[in-house]
Image 1 (cartoon, one colour):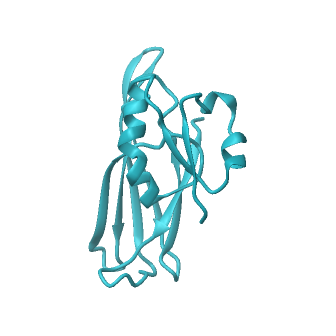
Image 2 (cartoon, rainbow, N blue to C red):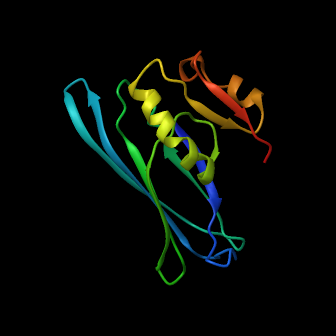
Image 3 (cartoon, helix red, strand yellow):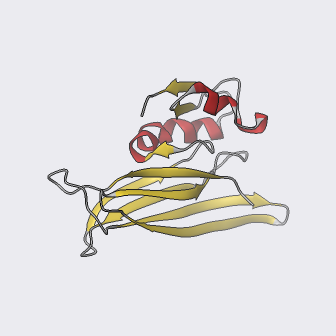
Length: 150
């Protein structure tokens, strides 16, 4: 069973008012290498926003293999099923919980780090103890850990 990270955020309209009862759809796209060869990997996960527009999803972490190429697309829809936003090619680097905005900022760097073993990953955490609690296989000596209060 693959590891998962909690990705969350708040769905808002153009006036920055929260959208209650909206829908968030996350789609996993890419490939992975298995013992019997390369396989296309896809998955779709959905959540509904609460009264304050908040949402969270448990999404597969795709930074644990060599030459990782799997990314997520996350879309937000209002209660009338009109698309509010779309964020493409998001790469989840660890099982640490992360806000969508932070994921968008760090995604490209972390995808590059997965493909090039000597490139540093940027991980955003609410406190350093959370990063230290990760299994040793998920931490790298080249990680840059940004402690950001919620």
